[in-house]
Amino acid sequence: MIIKSMSRKKATFGQLVDYFEDGRQEEKHTIYNNLFSKNAEDIKAEFTKNATFLAERKNGVYMYHEVLSITKSTKLSEEKQKEILEHIAKKYIQGRAKDNLVYGVLHDDKKDNLHYHFIISSNPVKNAKRHRLSKEEFSQFKKDLERYVLEVYPELEQKQLINKTPGLKKETGEKLSNKGAELKRRTGKTSQRDSLKDRLATVFAESKTKADFFNGLDREQLSIYVNGNTIGILDKASQRKHRLSTLGMLDAFNAISQVIEKAESQKIEPQAQAPANASRKEKVDTRAYRNQQQNSEAKPPADKEPPPKIKPHYDKPAEPELEPESEIELELKPESEMEREIAKRKAQMKKARDQEPDYSKDLSKGK
Image (cartoon, rainbow, N blue to C red; front, side, top):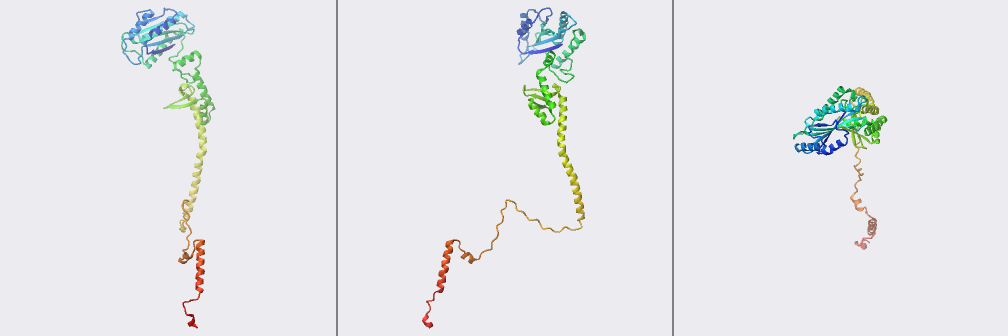
């Protein structure tokens, strides 16, 4: 048995009533809850009028379109199954919205199932307040109804679907949404999810190191995301996120994580052993040094010359000191070729003057 509920925020009662009427084969099993009319146009008018009592609210719900479906049984005639389904439908309405307007139409156009379509007003008759069940309340209501059907009508041969752990497959732990579970039941597969699982399984199988794992994810257009304690996969092709627990692959991920961590730790161990060996060798050297120090305590160490002071590379080398020149040398030392030539001529002239006779003396007196 399957139950679906879809809310509508527009008062499109006429559209939905017409859809119900188009798929109806007979009026025998039609349900009218709190409705006075049985004519389609009058039913539309009753729903529209009742909606005028609603308090105005932005994005407020005007009605619900809900479906109650059972798979066809091989043990009962189709008419008998319709009678039982009508009884189940009335029980559904009493538990779901007994004070609201409800219009239910049975459709039998499918080969493998019978199903009811319901229009349910969001408010009780002439009431301004909306009536709704919380998500938890509606979930519990569906579970209770399914248990009732399985216990009271085993001849319907219905499978336990609603009370089953939501979308959980025993062999894999995979979780499916309601739509996914229905698609899985009808076709046996969920295309996007199964494709993602196959690609992820390939990455897990080929990963021995961390590099293998992330290269594999890139190759399959996947990436890991972490949200708190939740680990998931982003499918870059569809831009959809999937939790590993929802895919039923959390255990496989944990297993491959252990393999990768072990491989990474083996790479680190040889590097970690080197400092340990060095520390043992250092202990031996230290012990020998202490013994040597104890033996040399009786002899005071000789004074050693301090090591030569090395100047930094950026210090310029000192220029060699020159002996100071005498004042005469400084005076006589020519500074250029011309000056040397002038000095030479001066010396020659001085020598010539020294060799000349002294005409200031009276040479005759000497005779």
